[in-house]
Image (cartoon, rainbow, N blue to C red):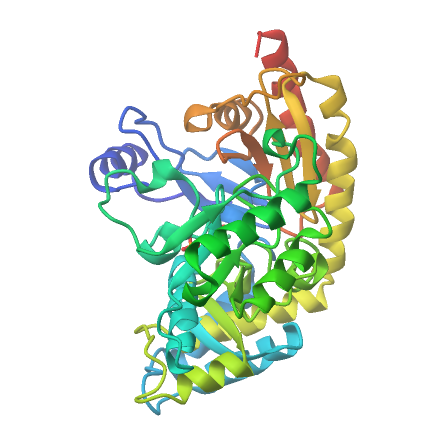
Length: 450
Ligand code: PLP
């Protein structure tokens, strides 16, 4: 592979001077400047090769650098690069993608609104839920139930639903009428002592609904499986019981499937697998495997017909909603996921990765638990496995050591989980390389005293 033609020193200096990076302290002036990618491998501006075990940020399902994606983008740009989907305008790619998504989605989902990503999608979903109740004559239903350690992006709407206080610091008042419940994370179980976790969580939900007043609540938003929170798979009865309570009170359910949809957990959508029957599903990331920004908010006919049928119609819209090049890319991406059997591959390789990784929980004191769903794997890091005290990883330090020493890119999230979310095309050999790299550094971290 060739490397960048821009002088490397210029790139480094210019990055530090010009680019604002999310979650990067100013004291860190080193950079890894990627210039090429192919399959699961990336090359930086110094010509160093890396194994991508994060799929970028949970999304490179079909792998990097696929020629057919470039061809689809170029062909669509030559034909129609852009026109708006506001008012009565539309385009053939957006229509075909909406049809495809309605066919892949759970049966209750019939209508589609396009965004440019996950945060925008969650904002749109929250607005849609509130507007739905308004249209139905219940304008007081404005509250949104979310959970601590949930991640719903960093725009103001979804960002308020996100359950990390540090991410909201210093930004003034966030969206009003959002409340956070306990996440269904049995390993972090001090709250559940002496009772079944789901009993605790459902009681808490009922109490909170009573406090706020059921007639004031628009929706609950939740990831079927919490990704950033550390691949937290809820107890099997959690979502079905939560859903029952919400239905009883006329509260909508928004599934944030920005991470889970399109194969990450081995299914097109994860919500049916965990017993959710959402009214609204938010997607992004794997929809295009990151080849171009695109998100889709999927809604039932009940929601779609209500919000489009009022006044001047649905009051949410973005310049790039239904962008024809993005939609053409998404159609090709979904075709590849299906044609190449990547859902089954995610289950197969994900199980293989987990089998290799799981023994580390009994071998190493600093690995409290290993969790996975499909091609998402998390190591819960603790100071020791008896106290379960979290081992914080400021600025991703263990991930940085793994990257520097082994060339394998993993990430710290939540902030005490080490997470792998590789492209679904990753081979078992590459998956073994990734887990071995993590294991070697964790073993040493243990012998270094954590
Ligand atoms: N929702 C979930 C579950 C996510 O994991 C993310 C990003 O990681 C988002 C929403 C935000 O998506 P975006 O970064 O595309 O705005």
